[in-house]
Image 1 (cartoon, rainbow, N blue to C red):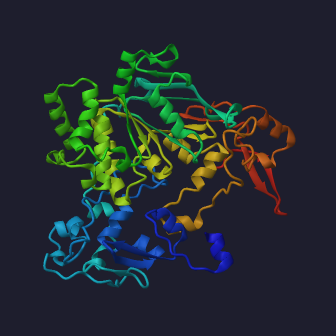
Image 2: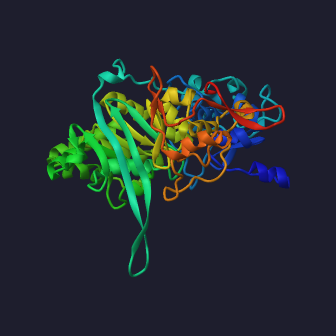
Image 3: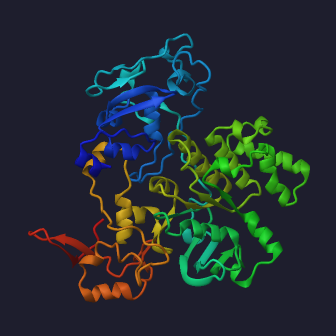
Length: 513
């Protein structure tokens, strides 16, 4: 979009909830709530000095990939007003922390605030709040109640002291590519997952990231399905899929592994009440009716929903509430591992903060382990303990989330992390991005040897003898000394240097981080 704008001189109107993308592209920003603008300013001024409580809350609700310390996100409780009914006074009043503390501008009989110029918050900064001048230096955590970071019983234990909840060894999933209408013949093999290994310990959140088509979702589904056709080995509580799984063992495995889906609307049967949704997995496990009713009400309280709403249907809940119902269903039979498939990508920013905080609290309180698949690396940085980066069905980097994010070694990981937007215009203006040339190859036509070689900025500048090493065989995962960190690259120490004539070449040296 930036290139098109530069070449055509066109103006761009961007409508998005991604505050990181906005910080990097927008010149001016208008924040809307309940159909009306509540704040408008230059991008740098709005991020540095937000003046409306809603804007302040939004900025506090966004996880940041450049933030290492573990803090809870700022949740904005409640939902926007129903615009089918007339909204009197401030439309944000029911969710506003200032109103809850008795703010003068938020009385029921007060007129709706209009946009007005805010002094001391930059040029042409407007906000629809009577107390905006008092809020321009306010941090989100000072305005909104923020839950404390929950402590798990496993927090004091080293990773080596925790038992593995699941072990994945050399997992492979290949699909035959068939051709022909009447008589089909095999013309190739799609290697969606091609030798993935990792383990997840008690109380741990392990995330898999990568571009679309890298194999992360297929990996998650293979782990959840326990398919006999899957190559490799999956060990859960001492039960190995390599030895074959009996029906009784499969029932036990299903109980210990549950899943939360990306789309909370599509994941819930619209014909079922919430009670029926939550009771179904309990019935499948043979629970008695009285115990089921007691457990369903308990689940509603655990995920922060009113127990007396169990007879409602899913369409009577908001998106965030529906995702909480999906989480409650996953927890129904007391699993040890919960798989999270893009758990907050379908939610608004303010809602996703509450769901992320809930997932962290449940992990600490119930001793859960998570396997999360996500595109949003800021969410991964915030919520995960360990992370694996996948490319074309293989793990190219794996380790503790801070090690991988702060000291990436594989060139693909470096490029991926450089592309993550940060919700700060000043940071975005000074960042250097690694632009990869070409599209992600399909698993059908993956390059020989290292799957990243045809897009790798270092490979193109290596001498021919080193290039032959890269294309001869897939590099193994090499462990970094004294660190929970591994990478699959033959020449990670190579740096790209630019000569005085502007030419690029690769030279040996330490990895730039």
